[in-house]
Length: 538
Ligand code: ZN
Image 1 (cartoon, helix red, strand yellow):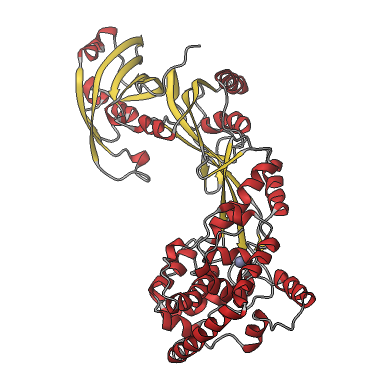
Image 2 (tube, protein in one colour):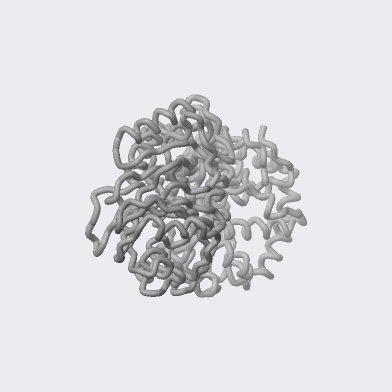
């Protein structure tokens, strides 16, 4: 039995004669029993027919015809703004005379079953069932995703809203005449009914995986209906400010814009531009390719860079590649293949120049893996992955590799300016030096520098004077023109500029302190003091 009440009868009748499918009738009767939608549509249609034919016994028909005279008067009054009543032929079809026999009724039923619904354009008819569920499952299986749950999302053509609105106005008139109060919000959405029917079927096809409302894994089905694309166009003239061209959208008639325009438009105005009920379509919606998307997975760790000719990110000048590889590519390649991810975004706690090594415990980094087909690796598998990276190149090394949350990633950037970094620089001096000439440097503590944006980064950073602190320094004498300088500095200090002075743009600088020209021959990052990600014991 369908969960319908006596008051629904005139609505059911009106919707069926307007060309609504059985499931759309249930939606407009606010039937929220999911099982009712999962029944075969032809069974529901038969039940609906039986349900309305109950009223057609002579006694109720008398009262109905009395009412209908009344109704005719009313609609006559309203005829100025409302579209004409159903054509007589349709009406006759719906209310068969007692002389018509079962055979004729069966032919008619068959005919009605094959008609494309004027509201859902076939979505809740042939586009909703075991065959479609099998097709969706097939795509998911072919892409070999690893997942426990999935969320099914549906994208419908925007004109479906116009048709829904038209049908609602058609029903609203009936409801008002019968003084039945129905809140439009209680209507069941096409999307909702589609999911009620499909979720279970898709789950079954995928061997019982849970199809839920929130999941990291999303399977999207999209429908288009080119035949009725123009249905929305009149709204652009009635509500032009709802349809502003946007950069990324192909059409201004987005679902959002159409919904907004329909909220604004007066019923009479709508009915002047659009038939109610909607016109009969000749074809169903066209299902587009099923799309699968897994939410990003985040991986973090620390890297060492042992090579003085390796940039951190691909180095491309005027479309031409300068170095054959980069830190991020060396790290990313094995990770991408392990997680079977489509792409990545790399970030790190600061970065070193191409000719600078990063030693010690390394530099914290994090990677967002886009659309990973695999999202969980055990601790042992992560360790294995780390080894694979480390074996793949002599130029870099990775430690503390782990899966982290998106939220945890921001810890790396937090308070980055306050963190300290330690360096070792190989210094050349123009004037010959002796061991004791440089020892005074070891006593300098918390030296504040004024650093004008270095010339070499001026093309990508705004011109400014930044204050940075060198907390401490130490020296190791090599020969009369060379020594090693150890520095512990505030993050963001430009070391090269402190050494050579950058034409006086960094003050004070090492040239001033030693009263001779100095230059930096080699630079190593010894430590980046960021306590994230947590270290993993080897
Ligand atoms: Zn329908």
